[in-house]
Length: 202
Length: 242
Image 1 (cartoon, each protein chain N blue to C red):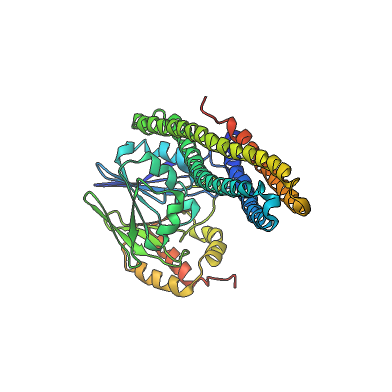
Image 2 (cartoon, each protein chain N blue to C red; image 1 turned 120 degrees about the vertical axis):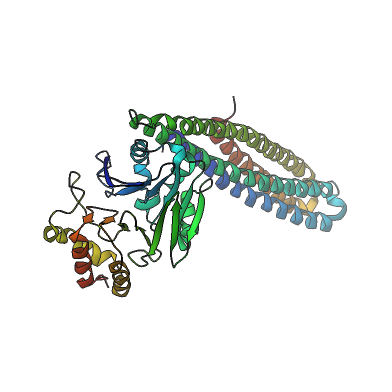
């Protein structure tokens, strides 16, 4: 296995690992939203501005979970494609070697068709991989967008929390947890993007 | 790779082995080819490491599009781990292999090649006018195991039965049976698990008219050495590791 193939396998495997962490964090945001909603309800008028924010947080968490679920399915397709490309490249190399070793054999020329076919299949796989990576990077960008939105919501939450009297600490804790989660999502997804960006279709 | 024609009649049998380019840390294997005018059957075509030299050697005898059939005596990697490569090279081929190993062998990738499962009681492979018999040899050593008998050429291909490990330049036929025995003893005692299976196989094989007994490793047996081998194997206690 070449270093390039190894890196490709590692890049694809790391997406699943990073995204499973994102999924956990997104679920935590969803929980924080539910918690915030309960606090805001108890706080009544003191947290009036906070109430619609909890719906935003919840919606954002749901959308992130949905996006990550789809990306995971896509990552699996990408993994299968990587295996396929590895097998096709190995076959092409072996076929070329066989053709070289068969020089002088009565039927040596009959090896040309399998060699050509293997080369085309390998190149198809490589092209498909690059196309799929570009699409996956687009989907990861959407998750990044959600993470950025979550940070804005966290900032707004802090402002609204400051108006909530005795509920200030509880609501600030909610804002902190959303901000922290947004950071984690951003960092993990950024690592996926860096791992994949070298394979992007140029 | 060394190529030896072991039968020439209406069809041919060719033995391939003693590959000088083989990595030192994998065992040497014999591959057999049955060639009819328009078709070609590879018996135990070998491991993935051996694919390129084996394909190159076969091209001395048949074009790629006439390699129509593969046979795997059992599921071991030295027998058939090249399957995924044959699968990509051949456009119209069948793999004849034990039914019980189908789900296992497909791990090597078998998409374009048609898997023809051999039931436990055996079957046949028809190659133009030649009919080869698939002889059950279960537990010798694999639980699902077949040998190939050609009644016309009087050749019995026996997979791991009769195997020995030899120097790369060793002759292809046994020339001194007494000296050869020690090269086979531990292999058969350790790898063959069942004395009962061995007895049943020997009874079956003694009724066949055999000129050449052709194992997957080491030298082939011909003439009186076939009977000598059966007698020796009959007397041997196997399954010694328990």
